[in-house]
Length: 283
Image (cartoon, rainbow, N blue to C red):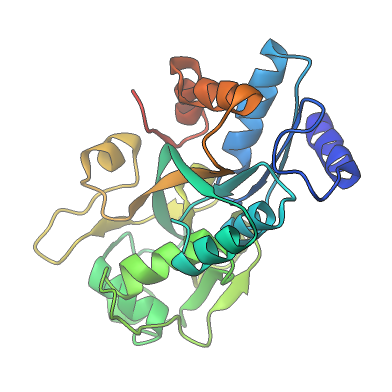
């Protein structure tokens, strides 16, 4: 907590015109899914290199990429790939986005532990979140209205879930979240609501699941096996809702930035990935 408070303080003091690390300080901003992971990396790295200060804040993947484009962070965390229009805007402003995959993540679909529904197909998930399925009894559960929880539209998790679950990977798909879906500002906000609402269903990075939520098993279709969001299932590809996690920088990393990213991708850095309940990109 102390390091996070210091991060916020120093972040507020930085100039807004930096495209490289300033005074041995690096601003890392973006995906709320990745905040805990990046904070763990930062804390361990600063123990090794006490002359370096790393400030980590969330706000969503879109916010992180906007900050990179505006020059108000050195590293943007993103749980989705950068969009073409973001690349075009960045290049127009003299920023050259450089992508690095740093970890993998499985998106858990979560319900309240009191909910008897424990497994769903991708088709059923699409029906739930588009509003075609409105009551848990349609899925073998209680006669209770389904309460939809989603991340807000600026979230890379929101974008990924829409493209890969609602639209089933079809780039021409037009499916959208049901208007009744409650758009929440963070994964933790969804977790907190799930914990106290027996009718709710939501999704977030599997690292946020605890005993107050139940992760449902997910199958690609009715003929496929139902799989849990675990490290082994994400690595093997058996779990159908998984994705890479990215750092974006202005150009290829040099100096201190390169040293930090090399640490994140090292054996020690990827062990932190496992300890924070994500999946290592490099084993």
